[in-house]
Image 1 (cartoon, rainbow, N blue to C red):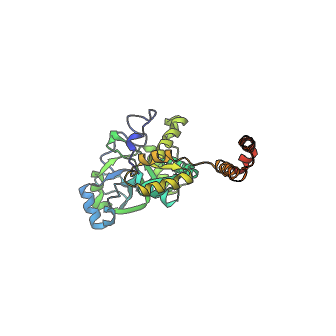
Image 2 (spheres, helix red, strand yellow):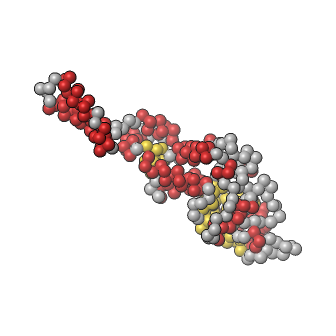
Image 3 (cartoon, rainbow, N blue to C red):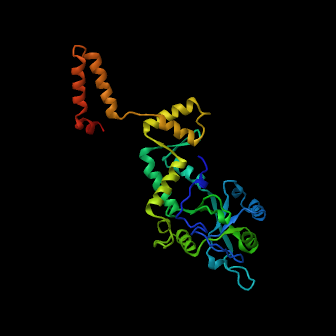
Length: 306
């Protein structure tokens, strides 16, 4: 699946700082929702206490502990004995895994194929992720101005705990981004499994409905090759026959567009026409054409066949 984060742009998004983040983060204290990069110090700690989380798929970590428990007053240690960190993976990786595991798409030689009937489910998933209403995950939109070039997804249930007394400074020094106050509240709601919705700035308030829908549409189309069941079947054959020539997303899209699949109605009409040619030789061609046109003009036939 191609990385097209750079291609998704919209004039209605604030070009300064995305509404999810604070422009100027607090450098003296950790806060809930802080995004930590994997510094040398943090890597050394993970190597000692949580080596599994050295996995390259985990690009960052997010602080899940409550902000009030992370404040260090008068040089003392913070209230919480442990700092809980959640793993952060690339959005593209999350989307690929989710689409395949939920049978919305098929990874075929690196090309993600989606049948048209599943496109609505894919679109709804992307909308939920963007709006942070997909359970167990928290979406982080890319922000070049803060040196955060790719969108990420926080896996809220994939977490580790570090001792605050020993590792607070290492976490603080690894701080890359801080959430805006309202998104800290939303994260707190998700983590605490609250049942009331926290009101936050969302895409609807920053973009027109048309622009938002177009953004989601572009996002889905840029990552998935979408076609009918018959088109997908034919595309798979071509991918098997010529994998090198069709190794990219764009090449697969172009190939799919060239695959013309007749509707069931058209296929039935072709069969009827073939029957006429083979079994009605005593009828002259003009009468055959009239009879065929009479059959084709019956809209009820098309309705029944679909």
